[in-house]
Length: 120
Image 1 (spheres, rainbow, N blue to C red):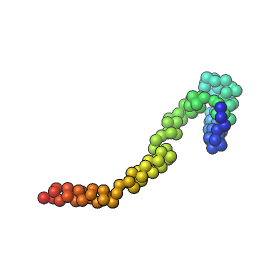
Image 2: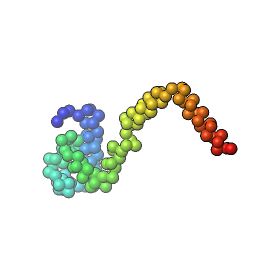
Image 3: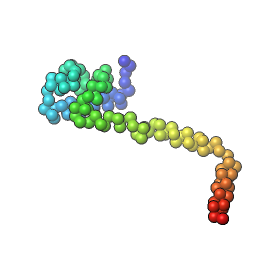
Image 4: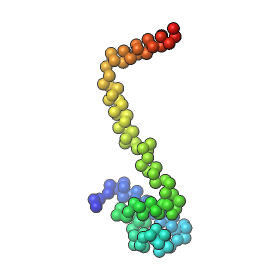
């Protein structure tokens, strides 16, 4: 596996730490929590350290045990995808720039004619 970007590694470490805190707050031992997750204690330890080699399914199951699995789909929700939104805006601006001034004037004139016809 290739090295993760630093921000991704940091996010996984924070997730692992948060999962460890959740386990401790529930007064669950590593052995009991690992059994509930269906994994070994060493894998649980790796997860709590934010190891990228741990399956996303294990992270999802841990979130489920905490009652937080519902938050998982929002992580990549289209409405939160700022990169795609920026791309959409750039595309719209390019399409707008392609139209000539004559084209815009023609559209406006058609709109005025249509409004006059509706009034009469």
